[in-house]
Image 1 (tube, rainbow, N blue to C red):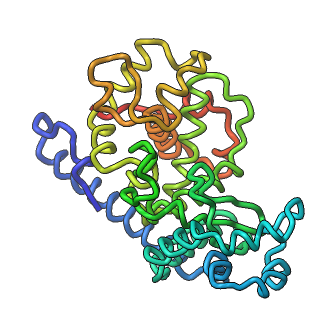
Image 2 (image 1 turned 180 degrees about the vertical axis):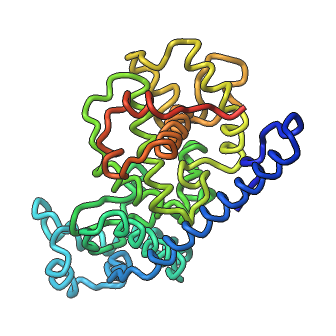
Length: 336
């Protein structure tokens, strides 16, 4: 519990009695908030989740040709009928697949920490989605397809473990740094949260820059609820220094967006400059290379946070709301 931000008001010009009352009020408010949060987390930790991670990656790597029919029967959705069995037998004998399997085992030999985070995510998700039924969680190898690290359906979830070996792994040498930094096991829970958020959020017409910011702000706010055990920089996929830069420059980022009249701009080039993954954001200023990419997402997050703080709205209602309504009622004030 950190009260520093709560107490950043000018107390010197107030009467002593009012100063005392103000401080006491803020202390009680902060304590109540912490107690309420602790109560919710206690309820969440008690939610029963029948979760077992099926290590198909290991099953396949340790199987012989005679095991193929049994694997196809247990995991028919992983064996497309478009391909003959010879494709799968060749894959079993492929030395590159063996290298991938060895690398995954070296990182995920002990899967307890990762499995605990996955379970905690699903407990939080179920707390806010009571009718949710836990799917089968299956780990696979994907030939390092980092654009599709997880795949989520109502009944099956696939996690490609060869895309989470660590940003300095030799398999990722040719990748850009901003891609590599999120190829870590710590990003499995955030990536799952992103996939579920994409399914839950209804916002079909994303035509303006503000629409895009609010859309991703909704995603990141859901991560606040679903993976509170993750730090903010992990939720958005920043390094610590990138997140600190964003916080320190929040006011100036917002000022730039407003002064350049970007909020209602429909130019899709803004997505590349401020929304999609990139090595840095593009303000067309000298400081650009100091900034992280996706700063539009970061600002959208702060707007949605402000809206949910200042308005009695359910989480489900927020996910369906018009972005303009969220912005109009957010009372967003960027940090200076």
